Image (cartoon, rainbow, N blue to C red; front, side):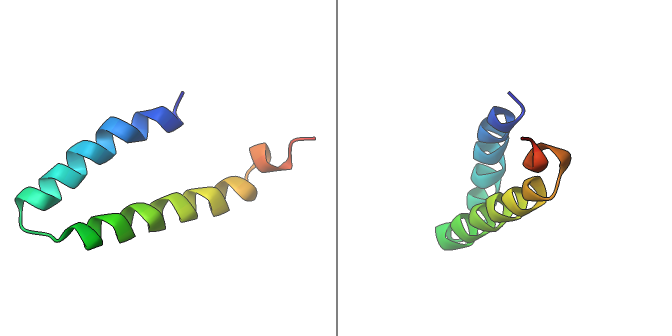
Length: 51
């Protein structure tokens, strides 16, 4: 459930960045970086060690 909370938050933040003149490529790279880092952190968390 927590992972779905990022969808409206990301939409709002992305819209805010676009409204302030940031190009779409910056938003895509930022979103990809955040998701990649979240996956890496999850890999080393107790949830990533579940058997």
